[in-house]
Image 1: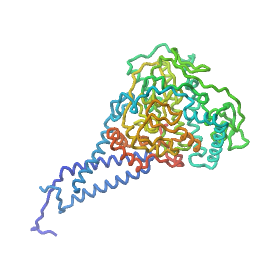
Image 2 (image 1 turned 90 degrees about the horizontal axis):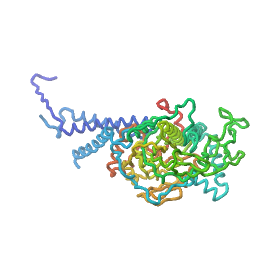
Image 3 (image 1 turned 90 degrees about the vertical axis):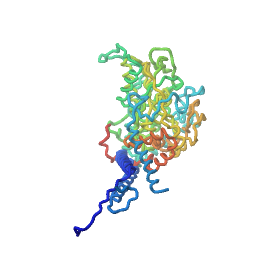
Length: 83
Length: 504
């Protein structure tokens, strides 16, 4: 329950430029790895397929985890600028 | 290193990889093969990457080609040794077929035999590979005009036709008489490995004793079968033999208007100054099942496609009003023409490796007097890659390939033609291994890191990077191993896999 006297602070943080650069690279890598995985299936390169699926899953998991972790409220983030 | 620096560094590396892929996909001009645009990382150069031939380079005797040299040597060294070996090989193959050894089952072996059919009908100078125009029949239109255009247009016309007929890569090289063999061996004229072959002998199916002709179609001629054996295992040596006149035929250049094949020689007119060099891609899925009858099917199909393409090209060129001589492996060395035409580079295999299909190609060529713009050799960083990689040499079960760091002029036997720099191979060892497998081999072709399908973008990016940054070659070799490329695939799985996507 909140009271009318409670004070809330909303912090808006701007992510640094390199975060967005990394996000673009992450996306590109995901696309390339997924494409390689699908292509490897078609070419019957099963070991390459397995490695690519694992790499894609780890990369996807890492990306999602990083995004959510950084987005957590109240978490100190020395890399982001507080506005 | 701080976490932030590490993150930034890994980001940069990843970015280069990802952007490299996109860049490799985006590039696509500046090609020696104008019927198909090639990537920019395939650089057109003035001289072959392993240098030009020296004065020691001489016309090669067709009898020194390793598949012919060895049987002849065996014949010279000990009477009948080759025949005994062939008989033993045939028995072994028959036993493997009966016990359904993976890669050698009846369907596997018949797949290979079926794929060889066109090639077996293609003998130098006759039939499909005829050197002369067929006589004009009532239904044929006589050639009354000659196609002329600019040299570039003429080349493009020929390349477009070659593509249509099934060429994977095509280039135009100048005729070099030194690349043309001295003779066509009688064995090649017969398309047989075993001497004293009687091609008229009828043989019976071994799996159906007492029944004439176990195959659909009944009794059949041995003429269509390779290596002196029935594909199901009965060697023709087991059958009564008849003698056949045997004669090597000289190949000569003369100032004549038309090519000719006589009882004693093959005549190439000197005015034939153009060579259409063609690479036919092999089926990589089958090649990856070498060395078995299944793997051999990739080569068989490549040869048959080659025969079809050059035969079609010869008719096409003759129809345009010019002379044409179609050749598959016969008559001349295909690799130097292909190098001069910019189809690929000479590799550690001492065979051609192309940027697009790696070593998984069969080569053929058409000699003609039709004027066309010549292409130039290419450089896509292969020689530097081969110096580091050595994967083919390690994969070769007979240790026939060179482990030397640098290519040299030092040959390893009469099957090598001196006078050019290469990683020369021991073809004798290679052919001995063929006798053990009962088929051809092809492990080296399949193991080459350039022999890959063209579906994955990343392969283009890797080849583009290797072409421009040889320092990365070692890392790419390690990655190639880690990803499991070049290993023999499941032999039995081929028949049960989904073939519906195959275009035929």
